[in-house]
Length: 261
Image (cartoon, rainbow, N blue to C red):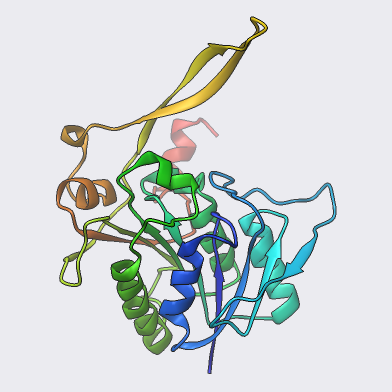
């Protein structure tokens, strides 16, 4: 029987992780290790300067479930140390899309990346939300049924056939208005999802403080063939095959001459 790891960055109590378990429980034994708390935008951060605490959780459909007071990457490392190798790792279903090269910021994508570095076929699964407040909640009002269907379908294919050649991870984004027959588009990562800036505010004592804020790139600037174009313009499910080797595909002799090495 397949051994499946499920984690996320929204926290153990997110309905998205329960939805992932429901989608996967018929495909194998599901192990859940997820953060105790909301850890969105944690990237590949690891907890190295304090001990980690863990709590056993009763989560229907799982062989075992733990809440870890660390980061998503910590959860993958803990799960492998405790339970050994997995046949598939799924991070999600995340509340809010994770697209463009900014997936390196995402705790959801980073957990899948961490698993992939250990040669575990991995999926980062995200569901677009149409209201900003939903991105950092527990998903009480969200319908995960369609995202669950796509997750089960693609996970079953990976467990049966393995990952495609030269693919380490899949980054999947489902539109909030998707249905069972929504087309799937294979995409590349867009360059950026948000244009970040800093907003200055003043506290009641007159001291300034700052929020990092972001404005999503306008639709008319999106490049066809990218994950953002597929989701935001075409309203398709975006599946981006990710390879972990970020080395530029260039002629090293040309680089040597350019840098005068």
